[in-house]
Image 1 (tube, one colour):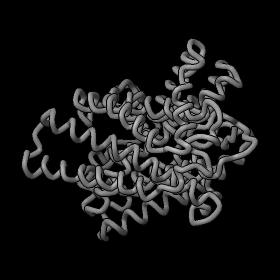
Image 2 (image 1 turned 45 degrees about the vertical axis):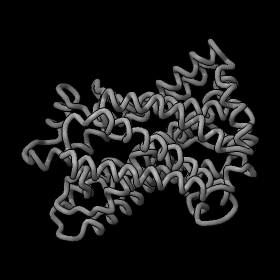
Image 3 (image 1 turned 135 degrees about the horizontal axis):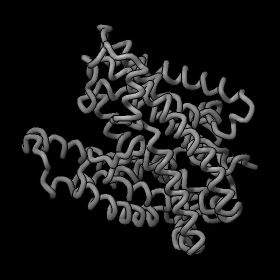
Image 4 (image 1 turned 135 degrees about the vertical axis):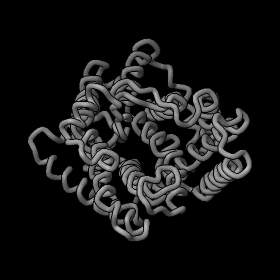
Length: 391
């Protein structure tokens, strides 16, 4: 089995060989996360700056619809095989070091520092010490993007339990993956059917903005099962024969990228059509009608799977050439960039708030400087002895 070095999700601390396509897809997603947080202050959805640009709403709608689900998929690829090879206890020990420790450190340091930049706009008189103490004792204690770490760790624990009880549980997904080497549309159809089946009822029940929150532990109610489905589909592919199945370098997946593009563009346009109906026809009611939530969730599910297939197909197709190779120098630092970028982005937004330039200029400055500073800081921290086991 081909493995990749650890970034956002890999359980193998020292990979023997890497799959460059998966490496680059993961690094690309990390940059998408940084882009998402750089532009969201300048959108209709998260308008926290006087300037805005509708094009950023288009970016945020797309990114929010797939990037975290795809992270869970990539994270699952090596979970099942790593549990089988290393044993559950050894595997969970590695995951606690890789996920649990960063979550705890970030929850008490970087996340309060990030949200302090937002708090200063409403309460400029409050000091950071007072803000920090109120955050960790009274709340609210938002987790920002690090919610991904504890949810992924929970899925890893669940995977260990399931592997102990039913070690062949994911074999049907693995067989479907092997069939998907020639017929990726079959895997697409099954994955879409299952992810839609778990997501549509969740969105209709909880809505898009309902979060489970307990201290720094938070996750969207309506998306928990969606993320779990993506994780275990990835785990099923990685049970065995990773390079012979759906993600085989020479498989059919990489040769039908235009098909995935069409499958992604159509539901994305339908999402905007539904947003127009909500705003201009329904008048932004709360709660929204069940028929609307159901249609929106279905389009969301189709777009999410299709855009993931499109991204994977692209990186599989151009694994030996093309601009995707430019991501290689950043690969080892991508996980650290994910962990460190959030306070950098929010403080840059804070400092640019009163600057009278176009939203595009502001967002470009935030994104570029966030990439540079988070990458440089990660590089520096990884020089500390033992840091590479965490970062």
